[in-house]
Length: 311
Image (cartoon, rainbow, N blue to C red):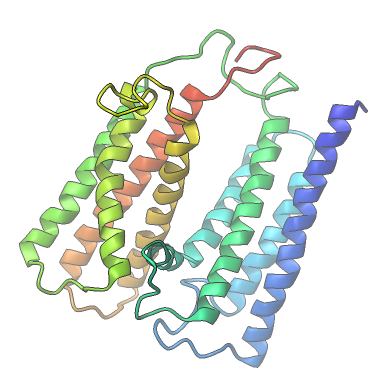
């Protein structure tokens, strides 16, 4: 085994052990709360959404088992990668309430619904999702394709600089989703909106994310600073400046409002009509999915070429 292969193997094992350690620690807490009784969460009734009680324990066990499989299976198995991403997505969805809480922190407020124990639990849940996602991404990089350095599957010489048509449609769908969301709000009026700073900040962030971000992901001014930007005009925009909010907000929005629709189907009580909630949450979900899709294309277009195969 070469030095590089040995180093890659050790880094992979480190991620596997990290996921297993998280599964034991966080899963142990979930097990103790399931058997002995969880703390009282007054605002939402639970710290997680959807996956509570034994379901939360099972999710931790699944994450640990998938991490071991990712480390042990030598070749590319699409089904295994799909299951791993599904488990990571379920962990994010379970902690979806974390999104407005983090927005509140950015605005130097915790909001009226903040509970420290629930917040720490959600952070722990998302930590597991991140670790498993890293392990899954590493598995994909080292098992797909025919290049031992990058494992990319695209044919050599097919790198493109223009966004794919589907990415443009995804970006425009994201903008349309935001327009539909605020059109629904106009229809019912703004009097009933909460004045909580974290929620207002979330709405402002969604407005920016739903217009500027998706369009930047599929236009040239999302790669090079336009001429009207002082001091930065003509310089290359760092990829992470768009990819982090693109993937982060996109996944967070889908998780948050996706779980909201699940709760709506279960008959949750709200001051708004079911029709309004279905339109608003569906529109937000389209926004999130559009961001994730456009970010995926942006990542593929702007990543560095492999030094070994040139792809």
